[in-house]
Length: 393
Image (cartoon, rainbow, N blue to C red; front, side, top):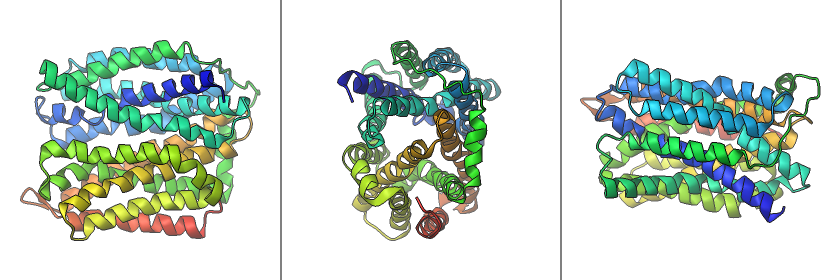
């Protein structure tokens, strides 16, 4: 892999996740605080992106495989998305803000599989082992963490945190940069096979092995929402100061970056996708076991590393698995199918399940965390067993 290709694809990966990381982790504070939205309303706004990920990756994958250059779709989606983010920054009514965020999510959801498919396309075209993609994937958690630290510094300097709309404006600015950058990306034409790539991707579900992978992806990715929705409050309820929660959770991104760079490629090469995915699912299982068991505060903080490992060895490894088995000319469509399973159906169903479970075990404003985290723990145990017994890799 040439340095020019590596830098181009790394910048693409960095900006894609910087845009997401700028607004998604912190918008809830604006919704629940200055805008006085209810928890249910906040949940619907946060559910907009998973909803969009059910449909748009499939549409974008079909376009990129058959009709339109990938880089042109990325340019259009990010520039339109930037405008919608600016509009969202000034909306205060729930209904109108939800519509704008949903429209934005439709744009952004289209780009997630295309960044992956562009990377895999050029790695294959240059006869580069797909395992080298880990050196590019590592920029995703780095971007997510750095943009969060930058936003914190911005708020300390310019005192913009009270209203909280600055996260949307920052994401809009990054979207413009991403759109312009995509114009400079390597030429990535559609295969134009005359077939329907999406049908080829769905035909893969006829393979029992791939179908098992997709079902487990939906279940395991959905259980991430217990982590995202519950961890911050869980930490505070266990005596960790709210100001220390973001830095504590950022351990996951640090471990994710290191594991992506140094561990993922060698693990896939030696253990194969079957056991790499099983280790990823087992990492979430260990996390929830630690959440359920009595523990000191330092162990809660240290346990964040298991989320980072799980994301690398299951989510990223799953996307690599999809690229490895994709039929010729349907790489974007297969990536779209994997993303739809993980970030679409999985996160959408997981969001609502987590909400129901957390409401059920909440009394007088306090959460009973042990039964709450027992639910994802039990489901992750089933996923680990299914991978070990049924999945052939």
